[in-house]
Length: 156
Ligand code: FES
Ligand code: FES
Image 1: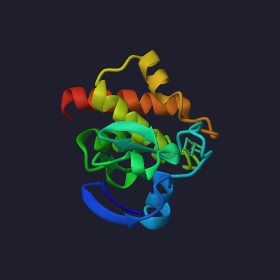
Image 2: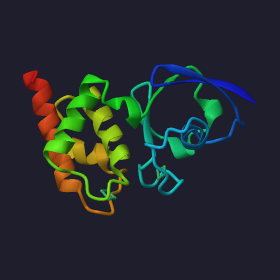
Image 3: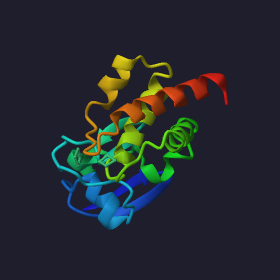
Image 4: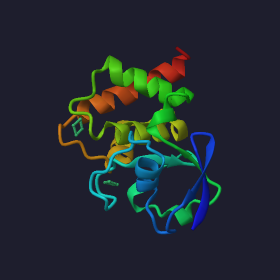
């Protein structure tokens, strides 16, 4: 079945089954492998992307549910103001260990700060609770989100 989806500002024409998860369209059809497969059941957050600015789980999002909504992936999040701050904070705080979960972490964190520029600790924990890190980088993730929020506030 033919679909046209908008990813990172570009429209792509696809011929896939309507129930194909967005994750597999991104990775296998479009070759955008920054978005990761973890559990395939909306349990780990590795596959998070933005749909009209909201973090969603691409592993359980069928392509026929997307319509004209705009998809943003880890490949383009650095082009957004909040995404750039998040990525800088991630580097400054040396958040990453193995890295497997981190594109999903960054997508959830950037969606949080875009909608809530001054999150409390509990709001950070609530927003990030669906993103699992087997390396246990949670403390540095929270520090990096706070650094990015401060940087946005100060207009650095
Ligand atoms: S791969 Fe989608 S939530 Fe785990
Ligand atoms: S950095 Fe290894 S799983 Fe999160």
